[in-house]
Image (cartoon, rainbow, N blue to C red; front, side, top):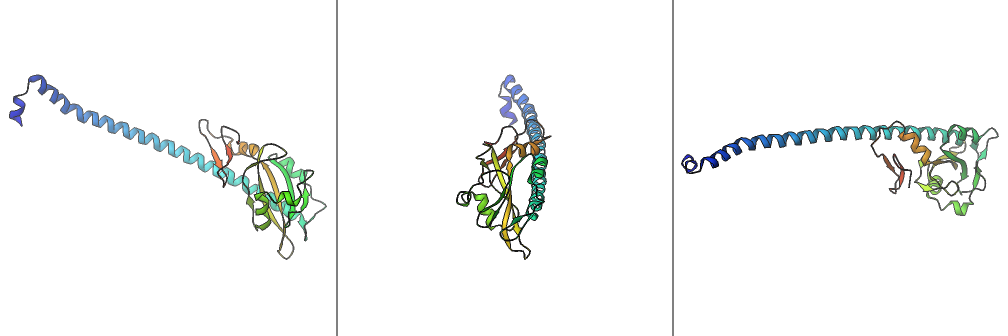
Length: 215
């Protein structure tokens, strides 16, 4: 190998010598850059994970609050079909929770028992809604998918909770219509700028996102 180098020009030998030193330096620089990129990615991933955890926790808290609220509403109705307690006042709940559009109760045949809004849909029309179909058969708190509200024109979701008689037999369900614009404002409050937070329903429709209103 040494004898071969002797036949090369001085200039060529110098270039080879420089390359011998430069290649490890370049490789080291590339390795350092790669490490920095991976480090920045880990930091970004940790930030995103933190935001996801905060968002999930807030949504969980709000849903838990709404479940308690629906349980209180359901407790104001008893019998088969459910009969409203004379002390029940839906307005007090609506004043405290501005994201709630309507509070209502239906029996297991989808007949309207109570609605804070006027002119509730008749059973044959109401039964077209998946949230109502789920409320009829479910024995627990349920959260429906997102859809545009007929009255408000804004995207809403409906949450349901079963109503039972003294024997524990289900006789109907209470429901809340929730404005997703106002709901998302509560969830994204205090989140850092520059991040897009998106929440989807079971049909992959936007329930909410941090930068744009629900579409």
